[in-house]
Image (cartoon, rainbow, N blue to C red; front, side):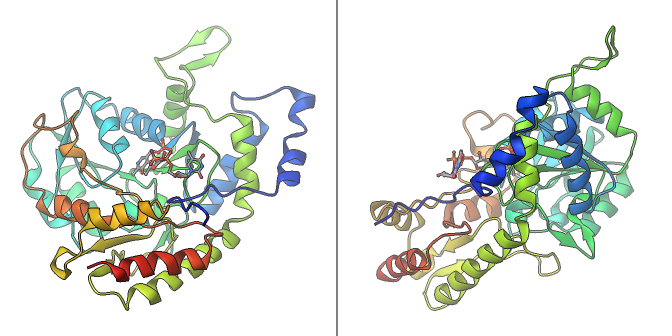
Length: 368
Ligand code: T4K
């Protein structure tokens, strides 16, 4: 039987990609904001329905530089979620800022907006929620808290490519949102990412931060990193962007198939998102309920034995990771911990065989 991994990179037709990269052998222009970088930036601005966008080398650097672009003072506090990929917390800490972990809602895994206000101090400068699995956060409530206290809102939208909320691209909310175009995402540029932002002046700031602050052959105007997307990655993005509908439809079919089957199985629930946001079928997170006699780790090990490899995205929670444990304010994040102890993200990709879903569900049924 074929090995089934949690996901499989989406790729364009081989010949189409080869044709698309051919011009690089004439121009030898491979990076530093080339033609394809510009084309992709413009196409993604339209596709994501955002006012401003800056492409980056990956989602992590997009987040790190988005935070840096606001110029927060060292030691300032950012309220964020522990139920996320570790990149979110690293990006805060690597900016010399303090993460303040706010608990999440058990029903969708996003930050619990009712618990944010009590965490605000005179050192708080921003709220950094995550649209985890593409589930839309409580955007209006978060914005009204931010407005009340004069805080920035920076969304980690790494999982939310193509999601719309109330008729607008998800990346158009808050002061900034970042996306990841990593190989494992619904849309990929191999490695890649972007910052979307409301203030157009941030474009120049982010440009400096991603290109060493170089503004002319003899002028470096500020200190910056190197976080540019190269031309091969941009071409991969241009090719993959043409396939988004096909990819989404195929993923939706598989999610619907899973959903019907899982409804028959005791003790396994799907972690669903906010019904108002559109779906991008980025992940398929399920909760294995101990109360029904099923253990998440036993289910995980059993699937592994059958060469099916789901992932514990996200376990342990960020605040319990060795590099952060007991370092920051002690806050009750019981819901995040409880979710992380029950969650499994099941295999999902455009050509995941339906009989693999049958096998997964049979294994789930046998257990418990
Ligand atoms: N914020 C959030 C909330 C995020 O989830 C992420 C990244 C970021 C920020 C940062 O964005 P990036 O800097 O990564 O753009 C993966 C991804 O590397 C990471 O992008 C993602 N989130 C995270 C949730 O998952 P791993 O360590 O689990 O990936 P890995 O290598 O085990 O791959 C998982 C499966 O994907 C493999 O079993 C097979 C498949 N795969 C993997 C690769 C690398 C492919 O089919 N092709 C590939 O090239 O982190």
